[in-house]
Image (cartoon, rainbow, N blue to C red; front, side, top):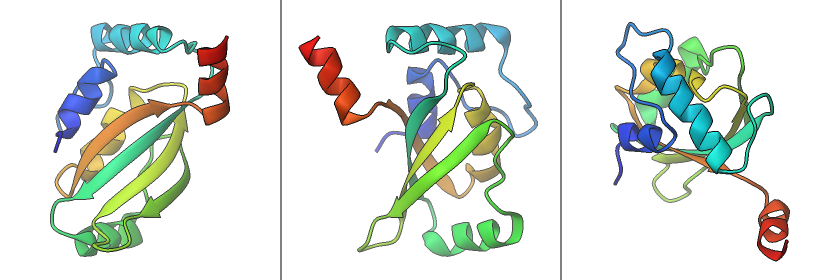
Length: 133
């Protein structure tokens, strides 16, 4: 299973220290370069599938969410989520942002309870259009 730092690196991001607010400019530049590689432009929202694996089961995650909410920074939008039915220990969240560096702030609030994989996604229709020209 991939750790969230590996997934963030694929986006040009890294795991932020607990006291970090933003990424260093060089990391933000790499994230923007990766968005261009995926055919996406800065200034437009990008959707991400966030796969969360709960380190200690669902109980602590739901307790914190109940106490503190999602703790999303402004500009990182939650769209919808689904939970793995059998074990309830994996969550698949569709999220959207213009600034992928905002994931660092959000992950810092949850990394003690959750392992993250973050994947930029497009619709099936857009993928088909890219393939067929």
